[in-house]
Figure 1: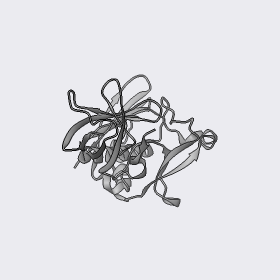
Figure 2: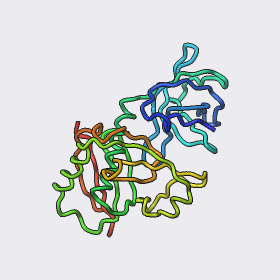
Figure 3: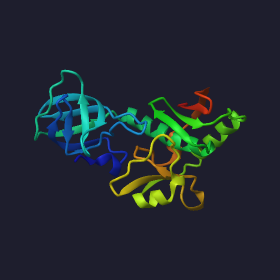
Figure 4: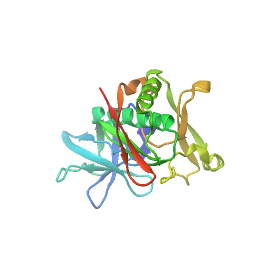
Length: 239
């Protein structure tokens, strides 16, 4: 099982690790990793591994068997042998933009309090699909409320609850099409704001900024009709 270091520190840019195996497809498994594995609409991390004077570019990270994370190297790249100690380096600029967009999407689900039917995250923009039969009438008002939440510089923190706690509080789950990962006894929640200033609390396994102020300037993009009841709302980083 890979120790998920990115869950302990969203801001870790480098770390040591030991190669514990290779996949038949040429992926690399480490005992511990800072590379986020693709999932929940967030792309896997990219970066590189260094060992014994060698370097391999990592193009993506995905979930492997059990609780392993598989790092996918560039085609034809040399692989560090099993047992090798490697230095992991993230493509930090890309990851940090994913963190800003991801947290921004959580705020988008606050200003548009409708069930979420899908979503995705990129380095420049993200989007949420909503169960929204009619388009919003006050787009400018949504934009203002969204930026106000960002500018309040609310803390972004986590907590863990049991599977049973989540079953007893189904309103925490905003997504209609994807259930949070369960079956291991506990579920991670992301909280934005604290006490009476809390604005959001929902299950999420992704990486986030530590406060909403780090998101910076954002802009609502296109609001697209994607079916009789679904509309896609795009969110862009504006700086």
